[in-house]
Image (cartoon, rainbow, N blue to C red; front, side):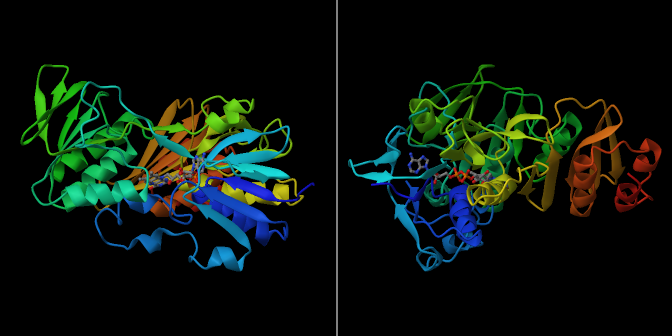
Length: 406
Ligand code: FAD
């Protein structure tokens, strides 16, 4: 028997948005949304911020009220893992042996924290942060005075550090690179965040390698490559994610640090799409494939792909954008430049904007407590605008005016 069902594997942010957007696009076929976690689709940004500091309840992270899915005739299979894909028979195999047939399959399997292969890393004091249960475990372990060692000064590591300080912990951040946030901002902005965390009492140790974790009676020691050690009650590792590509790979689809798809989210199998953190999509604006690990991509790429599944032909070409909140600072980053040959900074030391140029064209931008500049920066990036650098450097000229002239 043939089916017209759409099966979505992964009921995270991107999977949930795909299902929702399919209905919004008028798709009436059965939709199955299968997720390994026990929660309905939710947003992860609060996990290291407001949820960790106890400012919001878990339900606030849900992308829709719980009743929404049934109302939309979207069948949620929660606490259910998909074990394998059978492309020839167009079915997915669930844990326990049941199968579900599909006409269209969307892979929205996201990523999992990259593990560190360190001696002693299996200590119960070691934690990662990706899901609600991880946040709960961190919350339970952090109290005023708790000694927290964070390994990795990327976005998640620094957000955990800030939240743990807010909760009264004594926090040390260990990073092998010379400055934090090396994957998202330039060195100058990284150094600015280094100073920010130090001002808030975080012991920021840059350029240090971690060698081992040794559990003791009253805590653990993080042994450093320089022979030193950091005593900790809790160790949080934040060294990036690994995309969950295994289902696609084992089914013979192309993978390359992500599931390779075109600008419409399609794999080489016309019945199979991929969205969100797991997708390495062709990005028309960048002119290359890129895998984006950010809220906006998880929110909007699925909408674009759902419209394609519903019969449309608009590619997803939005400017890459992400943000982070640490203490009272809001960081936003747009673009994904590979080469920057000039940067222009506008603003003061506590509120500023960095515009990144390559051969006179705006390719990226960073704002620190200056979110209002983000929209014009994205417009300049989208236009691949060649701008008058002197006007760009003149903070008296609003960016919106430069956009008009671009
Ligand atoms: P995920 O959210 O990882 O969802 C994938 C889901 O698929 C998971 O629930 C997983 O259990 C499920 N799954 C995987 N394999 C299977 C299987 N075989 N069977 C069934 N289910 C499966 N971005 C920003 O722009 N700004 C921020 O401030 C920000 N903060 C963040 C804070 C944290 C702590 C984290 C973890 C991420 C943050 N992000 C932020 C990134 C953003 O949340 C992600 O880009 C987004 O969650 C990606 O959504 P996704 O649906 O693609 O993947």
